Length: 248
Image (cartoon, rainbow, N blue to C red; front, side, top):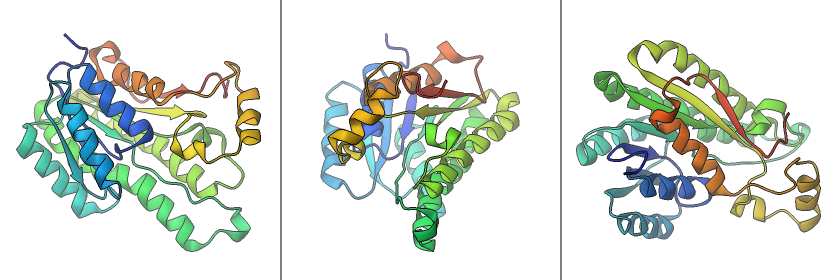
């Protein structure tokens, strides 16, 4: 028996990186997995097959979490296909980096829309069935950048800091309904996104981490398993840093 046996989890932005690792780990722990992707259609279809091969129900949906109506329709569809939503993992996110003096309005708006508004959209839609069930775990992916800021990422840092305030507010509002809301703040995780950095930049990052290495997507996924399962049943409104000690 896995830690999430027969629970239904919805993971946004799961076709690659951290989202993909989360979907796979949840399936390994016995959860049925609904997930979204946007542009990576082939990767989304491949992940669906990979998850189903683990013996659980899995379905991918091409859906834009930053679109309010699409988010509502997604939850309706997931409920029709799976019957309920026990765990929501808001993972969809992008970066459009640049120094503030050169940052365009479009760079600001797009990052806020995709990273922050998507969390509002999906959470608002998902809490209705969770309230009916009197149970649920919401896990929002923020970032260490949302805790300390980062030069050249004012838009990204603002979106990720906003997620923390949102997470804590939801925890306060819905605790009495047995719905928990927590955030995970990954540090330097080795994904396709960080793979674009040059070797010198990667080495610089690694030096500043007490554990002296970058994190793996699976290590973020393991923290999600903890917050989704009954192991964390008395934990809500928290930000769990998965960063190798980067921010201490």
